[in-house]
Structures are given as C-alpha cells and as structure tokens.
Length: 214
Ligand SMILES: C[S@@+](CC[C@H](N)C(=O)[O-])C[C@H]1O[C@@H](n2cnc3c(N)ncnc32)[C@H](O)[C@@H]1O
Image (tube, rainbow, N blue to C red; front, side, top):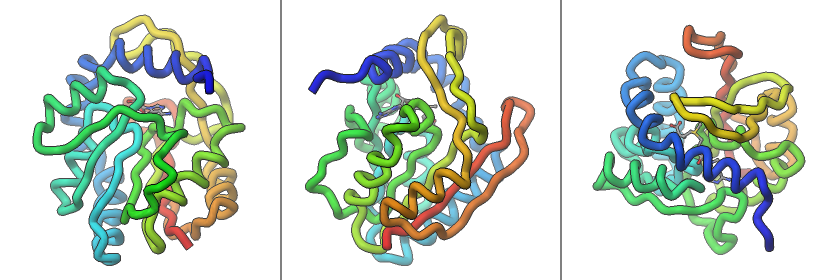
C-alpha cells in the first residue's frame, strides 16, 4: 500500500531534527514532575500484571524508553524516523530500538504488558486514530496497559520550524474526552486521566491517559 504523504512528511521532519531534539530534550524529565508521576504509575501497574514487556511507540531519541527501563520494565522502542532510531540506539546502547510505523504494528503480537505513546500520536490524522487504538489493543496481552501523553485542544497545526530546523509537517491537538471515547470503543477501560496546565515551554494544557485492555 502506498504510504500516506503525511507519514512521509513526519518521517522527514524527525529525521531532520533528530540530533537537535535529543540534545534539547535530554534533561527535560528532571523538571516534569507529572511526566514522572504518570510513568511511575504506569510502571507499577504494568509490574502488577507480571508481564514487564513494554513498547514505547514513537520513541524518538529514547528518553522515555530509557526512563521506563530505569523503572524496572523490559522496555524497547520503535520509531518512524531512522535518524531518531539511530540517535536513540547511540544514546541508549543497552536498549533495543527499531524502525516502524505505529499504524502498522505486527498484528501477531498480542503479548505486550504495556505500550506508551508519548506525544507520538500527535501527527496521526484524527480519522486514522480509531484504527490505531484497535491495533494497539491487539498488541497488548489481556490486562495490559496503554499510556498516552499529548497536547490538548482541537486544532490542526502546520509546523514549519522546530528545534532549530526548517521542516514541514502537521500536528493535531486532541480533546481528552474524545480520545477516552475512542479508547473505550477500541476495547480499553480508562483507568486514569490527568490534564495539567501548560508549563513555561508549552502553549496548551497537557493530557495523560492510562487505559487497560479489557
Ligand atoms: C514529539 S516526538 C516524541 C518522541 C518521544 N516519545 C519523546 O517524548 O521524546 C514524536 C515521535 O513520534 C514519531 N512518530 C510519529 N508518527 C509515527 C508513526 N506513525 N509511527 C512511529 N513513530 C511515529 C516521530 O518520528 C517522533 O520521533
């Protein structure tokens, strides 16, 4: 099947910014208390299932994957951008990162204890999100957990410059109440929702959703 143009744009954009992105966000976790809180809750809930295998989809430079590993999970990452995968692998040689599209996860999986999509669904056009949630659900073992983080809102944004580079891609703000409905329709039970105010480096409130495969 021909790859949608938006997927090619997103890959090209993250290929261009990969090295700068890693440098700029390397230490961000230290100042993001709610990021750490939600990731800690996710790690604890996944551990309670006894299945520690988790996949960070859209892992970028691997900072979240490495944090999950530091919390005791058997974490690996995958990303659309080969440059991001290379940066992640170099930064975290003890963790496995692979190139892939979260919209085309291996349908034979169904064995993961958890999946994290940390600001990585923000480039998927809204009309394709429901299908993504169904495929994320299929990749989880029964009782497995999904954790999402994203910027809240309803607008589509065209991004022409980011992390010091000229690029060209779209990003979508998402309404948590809409996403929770889609997750439920895809076979998840919503376990926790948090919306926090924008930090100094952000333009909109940020949402975290944790859901469990029914
Ligand atoms: C905003 S970055 C977030 C990276 C990382 N999760 C973090 O928080 O540092 C978005 C990442 O998602 C990846 N991405 C976007 N669409 C994707 C897709 N369809 N499949 C896999 N990765 C995707 C991009 O290549 C990029 O690395």
